Length: 459
Length: 51
Image 1: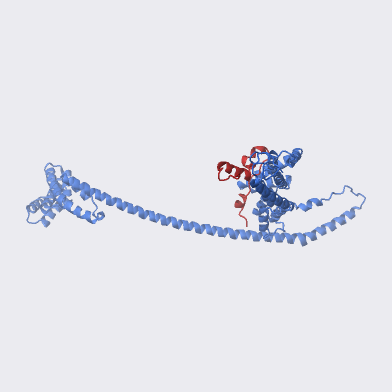
Image 2 (image 1 turned 45 degrees about the horizontal axis):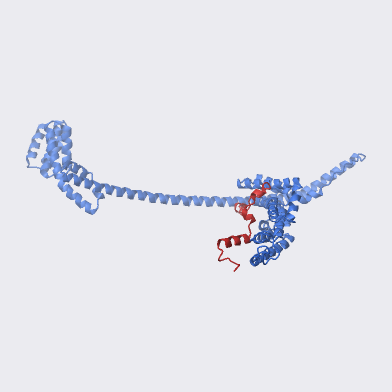
């Protein structure tokens, strides 16, 4: 391991003071010693196959002293052991760039470069793992499992791929297969955190029984027990012996089928039924929860809708009140400019129920001032129109005159002139109604006398 | 039981073997001594061990 002076960058012999630039290096020495302590810890953990823990210590060792090539080379070896060839090469390249003299990293890199097939296999396994990750992010579990199986087939030590494969199997409830992967990981790295976590999860599940949906799996140990078939065919035996063997074999199969396979299958199906029932219950509960949530949501929305309607009504009411106030202001202005008819028209359209107390008083005062004048003007204009035989205008003005709560003399005149207007227009019944009203409500007046005369004519 | 999506986030893509040299950045070559030295260069008075 090289010791480098941080001031002049030269290799140093005495660690307390640089023999080149003569500067104090006691603080550097302390840091170097810490780095060595972490390297030793990492080394012992690596020996016990506690690779994750070892990697943690070794990373600290190179953090304290980047020139601790022993630590960096061992860190590369650990990555290599865990199948992560990319990280291993990275550490060895850094190690070599920092110390070119007598560095083991050179040998490791050479060995890999001299085995191009192995390098390509490792590279493919990493590529497959990376593709599987992409598939999983797209929720394509099946494609990911295929890629991961290939990856661990090419690089059996690729612990991260085995962990991911185990996670996929756990998701698929294929606990037997997941357990196989986790056992492999822990045999390589005893302190692998993910594997330990999945191991804890799997310890609560049945990992000994191969579920019906895991059946395509060929247990690892059976691969070694492959028996080569005999190429020697004895044609000298009597055919009958074959028949007897066949019958014995068939009987044996029948016994195995009825006593071993069928009960096991039945048990598996029963387990499957229980699992499906559980799933159904979960789904029913989920559905009920969603239904309840939707109901609550509808309730909330209805409440909000009601609130909004009330707010809308309030706004409309406020707007109407403001409009009434505006009308009063307009009427006031028209009154001030002595435009009595327009002022009365505006006042007539005011809704008194929407006025405040103050405005109601103003409204009453305006009416008292404007209405009698407007009624008088309309009566006079209506009379003029009647004499000019403009009956439509006359009727309209005289009717309006009545609406503006006129004084008694104007009211009886308007009613009398309306009677005459209707008579002139040929509306006998309406004319009679107006004349009778004048006679009944304003008896003793000239208009009542004239109305009586008109009535006589009509009869 | 394991939350699959949460657990999946703990997995990240592995470093590819190709062009590893390009993936080595300055921080990979830095240690605590470099960091202390940088700080000393910035504040020479407060870190002056030479006395």
